[in-house]
Picture 1: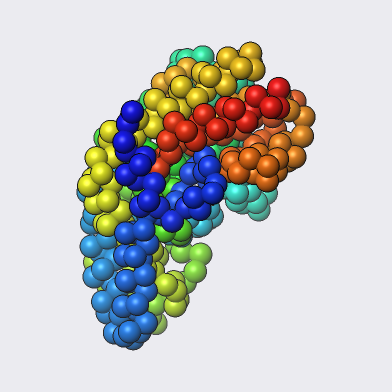
Picture 2: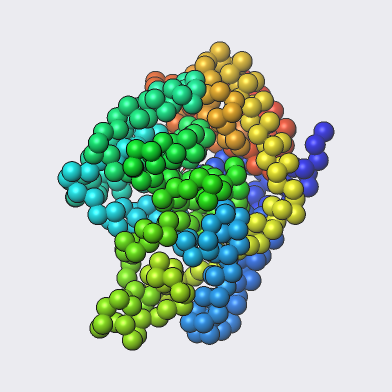
Length: 391
Ligand SMILES: Cc1ncc(COP(=O)(O)O)c(C=O)c1O
Protein backbone atom coordinates (compact mmCIF):
# COMPACT_ATOMS: atom_id res chain seq x y z
CA UNK A 1 0.00 0.00 0.00
CA UNK A 2 1.51 3.30 -1.09
CA UNK A 3 1.93 5.79 1.73
CA UNK A 4 2.18 8.99 -0.31
CA UNK A 5 -1.45 10.17 0.03
CA UNK A 6 -1.33 9.68 3.80
CA UNK A 7 1.71 11.90 3.84
CA UNK A 8 0.40 14.47 1.41
CA UNK A 9 -3.28 14.82 2.28
CA UNK A 10 -2.60 16.70 5.56
CA UNK A 11 -0.41 19.11 3.61
CA UNK A 12 -3.45 20.42 1.75
CA UNK A 13 -6.21 22.74 2.98
CA UNK A 14 -8.91 20.65 1.30
CA UNK A 15 -12.06 19.87 3.29
CA UNK A 16 -11.52 16.35 4.69
CA UNK A 17 -15.24 15.59 4.30
CA UNK A 18 -15.09 15.86 0.52
CA UNK A 19 -13.66 13.27 -1.86
CA UNK A 20 -11.92 15.76 -4.10
CA UNK A 21 -11.45 14.39 -7.61
CA UNK A 22 -11.37 17.72 -9.42
CA UNK A 23 -7.86 19.08 -9.14
CA UNK A 24 -8.08 19.97 -12.83
CA UNK A 25 -10.48 22.89 -12.48
CA UNK A 26 -8.62 25.19 -10.10
CA UNK A 27 -5.91 23.06 -8.49
CA UNK A 28 -5.43 22.93 -4.73
CA UNK A 29 -2.72 24.66 -2.78
CA UNK A 30 -0.60 22.91 -0.09
CA UNK A 31 -0.40 24.62 3.30
CA UNK A 32 3.32 25.50 3.09
CA UNK A 33 2.73 27.24 -0.24
CA UNK A 34 -0.32 29.03 1.08
CA UNK A 35 1.80 30.19 4.05
CA UNK A 36 4.41 31.44 1.61
CA UNK A 37 1.68 33.33 -0.27
CA UNK A 38 0.54 35.01 2.93
CA UNK A 39 4.12 35.78 3.84
CA UNK A 40 4.41 37.84 0.64
CA UNK A 41 1.07 39.50 1.30
CA UNK A 42 2.22 40.50 4.81
CA UNK A 43 5.47 41.84 3.40
CA UNK A 44 3.47 43.98 1.00
CA UNK A 45 1.16 45.32 3.71
CA UNK A 46 4.08 46.00 6.06
CA UNK A 47 5.84 48.34 3.65
CA UNK A 48 3.38 48.98 0.82
CA UNK A 49 5.35 51.65 -1.04
CA UNK A 50 8.83 50.20 -0.72
CA UNK A 51 7.53 46.75 -1.67
CA UNK A 52 5.35 47.77 -4.63
CA UNK A 53 7.73 50.31 -6.15
CA UNK A 54 11.07 48.56 -5.60
CA UNK A 55 11.30 45.15 -4.00
CA UNK A 56 8.58 43.36 -5.92
CA UNK A 57 10.42 43.73 -9.23
CA UNK A 58 13.46 41.84 -7.96
CA UNK A 59 11.19 39.23 -6.38
CA UNK A 60 9.29 38.84 -9.65
CA UNK A 61 12.52 38.44 -11.54
CA UNK A 62 13.63 35.70 -9.14
CA UNK A 63 10.29 34.00 -9.58
CA UNK A 64 10.50 34.19 -13.37
CA UNK A 65 14.04 32.84 -13.19
CA UNK A 66 12.87 29.79 -11.23
CA UNK A 67 9.97 29.22 -13.61
CA UNK A 68 12.23 29.72 -16.63
CA UNK A 69 14.59 27.05 -15.32
CA UNK A 70 11.65 24.74 -14.65
CA UNK A 71 10.19 24.99 -18.17
CA UNK A 72 13.52 25.68 -19.90
CA UNK A 73 13.24 29.19 -21.27
CA UNK A 74 14.82 32.57 -20.62
CA UNK A 75 13.24 34.35 -17.63
CA UNK A 76 12.70 37.44 -19.82
CA UNK A 77 10.73 35.51 -22.41
CA UNK A 78 7.85 34.98 -20.01
CA UNK A 79 5.54 37.27 -18.09
CA UNK A 80 3.00 36.48 -15.41
CA UNK A 81 -0.73 36.69 -15.97
CA UNK A 82 -3.41 35.67 -13.50
CA UNK A 83 -4.67 32.94 -15.84
CA UNK A 84 -4.51 31.64 -19.41
CA UNK A 85 -7.81 33.36 -20.24
CA UNK A 86 -6.12 36.73 -19.62
CA UNK A 87 -3.02 35.67 -21.49
CA UNK A 88 -4.92 34.58 -24.62
CA UNK A 89 -7.21 37.63 -24.59
CA UNK A 90 -4.10 39.79 -24.35
CA UNK A 91 -2.24 37.98 -27.08
CA UNK A 92 -4.80 37.89 -29.91
CA UNK A 93 -4.96 41.65 -30.63
CA UNK A 94 -1.15 41.76 -30.86
CA UNK A 95 -1.22 39.28 -33.74
CA UNK A 96 -2.73 41.94 -36.04
CA UNK A 97 -4.77 39.42 -37.98
CA UNK A 98 -6.92 40.56 -40.91
CA UNK A 99 -9.60 39.20 -43.27
CA UNK A 100 -7.04 37.33 -45.40
CA UNK A 101 -5.81 35.30 -42.42
CA UNK A 102 -6.92 32.01 -40.90
CA UNK A 103 -6.31 30.52 -37.48
CA UNK A 104 -6.62 26.76 -37.28
CA UNK A 105 -7.78 25.15 -34.06
CA UNK A 106 -9.70 22.11 -32.80
CA UNK A 107 -13.22 21.56 -31.51
CA UNK A 108 -11.72 20.62 -28.13
CA UNK A 109 -10.60 24.06 -26.96
CA UNK A 110 -11.40 25.70 -23.66
CA UNK A 111 -14.60 27.74 -23.94
CA UNK A 112 -13.34 30.98 -22.35
CA UNK A 113 -10.36 31.26 -24.69
CA UNK A 114 -12.49 30.13 -27.63
CA UNK A 115 -14.74 33.13 -26.97
CA UNK A 116 -11.83 35.55 -27.24
CA UNK A 117 -10.91 34.06 -30.62
CA UNK A 118 -14.51 34.29 -31.84
CA UNK A 119 -14.79 37.92 -30.69
CA UNK A 120 -11.58 39.04 -32.38
CA UNK A 121 -12.34 37.01 -35.51
CA UNK A 122 -15.66 38.85 -35.82
CA UNK A 123 -13.99 42.18 -35.13
CA UNK A 124 -10.97 41.82 -37.43
CA UNK A 125 -12.44 39.55 -40.08
CA UNK A 126 -10.00 36.65 -39.85
CA UNK A 127 -11.33 33.09 -40.01
CA UNK A 128 -11.18 30.92 -36.88
CA UNK A 129 -11.42 27.38 -38.23
CA UNK A 130 -12.03 24.28 -36.12
CA UNK A 131 -10.86 20.84 -37.15
CA UNK A 132 -13.19 18.23 -35.72
CA UNK A 133 -11.61 15.58 -33.55
CA UNK A 134 -14.26 12.89 -33.05
CA UNK A 135 -13.75 10.60 -30.07
CA UNK A 136 -12.59 7.95 -29.42
CA UNK A 137 -9.30 9.02 -30.89
CA UNK A 138 -7.17 6.05 -31.91
CA UNK A 139 -3.72 7.29 -32.89
CA UNK A 140 -1.40 10.28 -33.20
CA UNK A 141 -1.45 9.84 -36.97
CA UNK A 142 -5.24 10.04 -37.02
CA UNK A 143 -5.20 13.16 -34.86
CA UNK A 144 -2.59 14.90 -37.01
CA UNK A 145 -4.36 13.98 -40.23
CA UNK A 146 -7.68 15.34 -38.93
CA UNK A 147 -6.10 18.46 -37.49
CA UNK A 148 -4.20 19.45 -40.64
CA UNK A 149 -7.10 18.59 -42.95
CA UNK A 150 -8.44 22.15 -42.61
CA UNK A 151 -5.13 23.95 -43.07
CA UNK A 152 -4.95 26.19 -46.15
CA UNK A 153 -2.36 28.57 -47.61
CA UNK A 154 -4.10 31.31 -45.55
CA UNK A 155 -3.44 29.53 -42.23
CA UNK A 156 -1.20 31.90 -40.31
CA UNK A 157 -1.47 30.46 -36.81
CA UNK A 158 -2.45 27.22 -35.18
CA UNK A 159 -3.91 27.44 -31.70
CA UNK A 160 -4.50 24.34 -29.61
CA UNK A 161 -4.37 22.90 -26.13
CA UNK A 162 -1.45 20.82 -24.96
CA UNK A 163 -3.87 19.01 -22.63
CA UNK A 164 -7.54 19.50 -23.48
CA UNK A 165 -9.89 20.71 -20.81
CA UNK A 166 -13.07 18.67 -20.89
CA UNK A 167 -11.63 15.60 -22.62
CA UNK A 168 -8.27 15.53 -20.73
CA UNK A 169 -6.26 14.44 -23.80
CA UNK A 170 -2.52 15.06 -24.00
CA UNK A 171 -2.26 16.20 -27.61
CA UNK A 172 0.85 15.47 -29.72
CA UNK A 173 1.99 19.08 -29.51
CA UNK A 174 5.66 18.53 -30.32
CA UNK A 175 4.64 16.93 -33.60
CA UNK A 176 2.17 19.72 -34.39
CA UNK A 177 4.73 22.45 -33.67
CA UNK A 178 7.30 20.68 -35.87
CA UNK A 179 4.87 20.34 -38.77
CA UNK A 180 3.72 23.96 -38.36
CA UNK A 181 7.32 25.11 -38.81
CA UNK A 182 7.60 23.13 -42.04
CA UNK A 183 4.40 24.80 -43.24
CA UNK A 184 5.53 28.29 -42.17
CA UNK A 185 2.70 28.60 -39.63
CA UNK A 186 3.13 30.13 -36.17
CA UNK A 187 2.05 28.19 -33.06
CA UNK A 188 0.06 29.30 -30.03
CA UNK A 189 -0.21 26.61 -27.37
CA UNK A 190 -2.62 26.61 -24.44
CA UNK A 191 -0.83 24.60 -21.78
CA UNK A 192 -3.16 25.47 -18.90
CA UNK A 193 -2.91 21.92 -17.51
CA UNK A 194 0.75 21.30 -18.24
CA UNK A 195 3.16 22.80 -15.64
CA UNK A 196 3.59 20.30 -12.82
CA UNK A 197 1.61 17.67 -14.74
CA UNK A 198 3.71 16.57 -17.72
CA UNK A 199 7.25 17.67 -18.63
CA UNK A 200 7.50 21.00 -20.43
CA UNK A 201 10.66 22.01 -22.26
CA UNK A 202 10.03 25.21 -24.15
CA UNK A 203 13.40 25.29 -25.88
CA UNK A 204 12.99 21.73 -27.15
CA UNK A 205 9.39 22.26 -28.27
CA UNK A 206 10.11 25.73 -29.65
CA UNK A 207 6.56 27.12 -29.96
CA UNK A 208 6.02 30.78 -30.84
CA UNK A 209 3.62 31.44 -27.95
CA UNK A 210 2.81 29.26 -24.94
CA UNK A 211 0.59 29.95 -21.96
CA UNK A 212 0.44 27.76 -18.87
CA UNK A 213 -1.21 27.87 -15.45
CA UNK A 214 0.81 27.32 -12.27
CA UNK A 215 -2.23 27.25 -9.97
CA UNK A 216 -3.42 23.92 -11.36
CA UNK A 217 -0.86 21.11 -11.29
CA UNK A 218 2.05 23.10 -9.86
CA UNK A 219 -0.24 23.83 -6.89
CA UNK A 220 0.38 27.58 -6.58
CA UNK A 221 -2.37 29.71 -5.02
CA UNK A 222 -5.04 30.84 -7.49
CA UNK A 223 -4.09 33.39 -10.14
CA UNK A 224 -0.60 32.35 -11.29
CA UNK A 225 -0.07 31.77 -15.00
CA UNK A 226 2.41 32.81 -17.63
CA UNK A 227 2.72 33.73 -21.25
CA UNK A 228 5.90 32.79 -23.10
CA UNK A 229 6.62 34.66 -26.32
CA UNK A 230 9.55 33.87 -28.61
CA UNK A 231 12.08 36.71 -28.38
CA UNK A 232 11.85 37.79 -32.02
CA UNK A 233 8.07 38.27 -31.67
CA UNK A 234 8.09 40.26 -28.45
CA UNK A 235 8.34 43.70 -30.10
CA UNK A 236 4.92 43.16 -31.68
CA UNK A 237 3.28 42.59 -28.30
CA UNK A 238 1.06 45.28 -26.82
CA UNK A 239 -0.67 45.03 -23.46
CA UNK A 240 -4.43 45.36 -23.06
CA UNK A 241 -3.78 47.37 -19.90
CA UNK A 242 -1.34 50.23 -20.48
CA UNK A 243 0.73 51.43 -17.58
CA UNK A 244 4.09 52.82 -16.45
CA UNK A 245 6.21 50.18 -18.12
CA UNK A 246 4.94 51.11 -21.57
CA UNK A 247 6.16 53.94 -23.82
CA UNK A 248 9.96 53.90 -23.82
CA UNK A 249 9.91 54.17 -27.61
CA UNK A 250 7.75 57.34 -27.55
CA UNK A 251 9.37 60.76 -26.99
CA UNK A 252 6.55 62.01 -24.83
CA UNK A 253 6.90 59.12 -22.37
CA UNK A 254 10.57 58.21 -22.71
CA UNK A 255 11.79 60.05 -19.62
CA UNK A 256 9.04 58.86 -17.29
CA UNK A 257 8.63 55.23 -18.40
CA UNK A 258 9.53 52.89 -15.57
CA UNK A 259 12.01 50.31 -16.78
CA UNK A 260 12.43 47.69 -14.11
CA UNK A 261 13.76 45.13 -16.54
CA UNK A 262 15.98 45.32 -19.60
CA UNK A 263 13.18 43.61 -21.50
CA UNK A 264 10.44 45.77 -23.03
CA UNK A 265 8.21 42.68 -23.07
CA UNK A 266 8.57 42.29 -19.31
CA UNK A 267 8.11 46.02 -18.62
CA UNK A 268 4.88 46.41 -20.58
CA UNK A 269 3.16 43.47 -18.87
CA UNK A 270 4.63 43.34 -15.41
CA UNK A 271 3.14 46.48 -13.93
CA UNK A 272 -0.56 46.79 -14.76
CA UNK A 273 -1.67 49.18 -12.04
CA UNK A 274 -1.93 48.38 -8.35
CA UNK A 275 -2.55 44.70 -7.72
CA UNK A 276 -1.45 41.98 -5.36
CA UNK A 277 1.30 40.00 -7.08
CA UNK A 278 2.03 37.77 -4.07
CA UNK A 279 0.70 34.65 -5.78
CA UNK A 280 3.25 35.08 -8.62
CA UNK A 281 6.03 35.04 -6.02
CA UNK A 282 5.14 31.57 -4.75
CA UNK A 283 6.35 29.79 -7.90
CA UNK A 284 9.87 28.99 -6.58
CA UNK A 285 8.41 27.54 -3.36
CA UNK A 286 5.88 25.45 -5.30
CA UNK A 287 8.61 23.98 -7.51
CA UNK A 288 10.65 23.24 -4.39
CA UNK A 289 7.66 21.65 -2.63
CA UNK A 290 7.13 19.20 -5.48
CA UNK A 291 10.84 18.45 -5.58
CA UNK A 292 10.88 17.78 -1.87
CA UNK A 293 8.09 15.22 -2.19
CA UNK A 294 9.61 13.49 -5.23
CA UNK A 295 6.79 14.57 -7.50
CA UNK A 296 7.92 12.38 -10.40
CA UNK A 297 6.91 9.35 -8.39
CA UNK A 298 3.74 11.12 -7.16
CA UNK A 299 2.81 11.79 -10.79
CA UNK A 300 3.43 8.24 -11.90
CA UNK A 301 1.41 6.81 -8.99
CA UNK A 302 -1.44 9.20 -9.89
CA UNK A 303 -1.21 8.25 -13.58
CA UNK A 304 -1.54 4.58 -12.72
CA UNK A 305 -4.54 5.31 -10.50
CA UNK A 306 -6.22 7.25 -13.33
CA UNK A 307 -5.86 4.34 -15.75
CA UNK A 308 -7.03 1.86 -13.14
CA UNK A 309 -10.09 3.99 -12.32
CA UNK A 310 -10.95 4.46 -15.99
CA UNK A 311 -10.64 0.73 -16.69
CA UNK A 312 -12.82 -0.22 -13.73
CA UNK A 313 -15.49 2.33 -14.63
CA UNK A 314 -15.64 1.41 -18.33
CA UNK A 315 -15.88 -2.24 -17.33
CA UNK A 316 -18.87 -1.24 -15.23
CA UNK A 317 -20.62 0.73 -17.98
CA UNK A 318 -19.52 -1.16 -21.09
CA UNK A 319 -19.02 2.21 -22.81
CA UNK A 320 -15.98 2.94 -24.98
CA UNK A 321 -12.81 4.57 -23.70
CA UNK A 322 -12.08 7.89 -25.37
CA UNK A 323 -8.36 7.43 -26.11
CA UNK A 324 -5.38 5.08 -25.76
CA UNK A 325 -3.66 5.01 -22.34
CA UNK A 326 -0.70 7.13 -23.34
CA UNK A 327 -2.93 10.12 -24.13
CA UNK A 328 -3.67 10.52 -20.42
CA UNK A 329 -1.80 11.97 -17.45
CA UNK A 330 -3.41 12.68 -14.09
CA UNK A 331 -6.88 13.17 -15.59
CA UNK A 332 -9.28 11.09 -17.66
CA UNK A 333 -12.70 11.80 -19.07
CA UNK A 334 -15.02 8.82 -18.85
CA UNK A 335 -18.45 8.27 -20.43
CA UNK A 336 -21.33 7.46 -18.13
CA UNK A 337 -24.96 6.52 -18.97
CA UNK A 338 -26.86 9.41 -17.33
CA UNK A 339 -29.24 11.84 -19.01
CA UNK A 340 -29.09 14.75 -16.65
CA UNK A 341 -25.52 16.00 -16.35
CA UNK A 342 -26.32 18.68 -13.77
CA UNK A 343 -28.42 16.45 -11.52
CA UNK A 344 -25.73 13.76 -11.68
CA UNK A 345 -23.09 16.20 -10.45
CA UNK A 346 -25.37 17.51 -7.72
CA UNK A 347 -26.20 14.04 -6.47
CA UNK A 348 -22.55 13.01 -6.41
CA UNK A 349 -21.73 16.06 -4.31
CA UNK A 350 -24.80 16.40 -2.11
CA UNK A 351 -25.44 12.73 -1.41
CA UNK A 352 -21.96 11.22 -1.69
CA UNK A 353 -19.54 14.13 -1.07
CA UNK A 354 -17.74 13.61 -4.36
CA UNK A 355 -16.44 16.68 -6.17
CA UNK A 356 -16.06 15.86 -9.85
CA UNK A 357 -16.98 17.80 -13.03
CA UNK A 358 -19.61 16.31 -15.34
CA UNK A 359 -20.35 17.27 -18.93
CA UNK A 360 -22.55 16.31 -21.86
CA UNK A 361 -20.88 14.22 -24.56
CA UNK A 362 -22.81 13.17 -27.68
CA UNK A 363 -26.05 12.33 -25.89
CA UNK A 364 -24.34 10.76 -22.88
CA UNK A 365 -22.84 12.19 -19.76
CA UNK A 366 -19.14 12.17 -19.15
CA UNK A 367 -17.12 13.12 -16.12
CA UNK A 368 -13.49 14.02 -15.68
CA UNK A 369 -11.55 12.39 -12.89
CA UNK A 370 -8.39 14.12 -11.61
CA UNK A 371 -5.93 12.36 -9.35
CA UNK A 372 -3.42 14.42 -7.39
CA UNK A 373 -0.89 13.44 -4.72
CA UNK A 374 -3.44 13.75 -1.91
CA UNK A 375 -5.86 11.23 -3.47
CA UNK A 376 -5.85 7.65 -2.25
CA UNK A 377 -7.22 4.37 -3.59
CA UNK A 378 -10.03 4.82 -1.07
CA UNK A 379 -11.18 7.96 -2.95
CA UNK A 380 -11.44 6.00 -6.20
CA UNK A 381 -13.13 3.07 -4.45
CA UNK A 382 -15.72 5.47 -3.00
CA UNK A 383 -16.40 6.91 -6.46
CA UNK A 384 -16.80 3.48 -8.04
CA UNK A 385 -19.02 2.18 -5.22
CA UNK A 386 -21.17 5.28 -5.67
CA UNK A 387 -21.36 4.97 -9.46
CA UNK A 388 -22.76 1.47 -9.10
CA UNK A 389 -25.87 3.06 -7.55
CA UNK A 390 -26.50 5.02 -10.75
CA UNK A 391 -26.37 2.11 -13.20
C1 LIG B 1 -7.26 23.93 -21.61
C2 LIG B 1 -7.56 25.11 -20.74
N1 LIG B 1 -7.22 26.33 -21.17
C3 LIG B 1 -7.44 27.43 -20.46
C4 LIG B 1 -8.02 27.36 -19.23
C5 LIG B 1 -8.25 28.64 -18.53
O1 LIG B 1 -8.02 28.68 -17.23
P1 LIG B 1 -8.34 30.00 -16.41
O2 LIG B 1 -9.78 29.97 -16.08
O3 LIG B 1 -7.44 29.86 -15.24
O4 LIG B 1 -7.99 31.14 -17.29
C6 LIG B 1 -8.43 26.12 -18.71
C7 LIG B 1 -9.08 25.99 -17.40
O5 LIG B 1 -9.42 24.98 -16.91
C8 LIG B 1 -8.18 24.97 -19.49
O6 LIG B 1 -8.56 23.75 -19.06
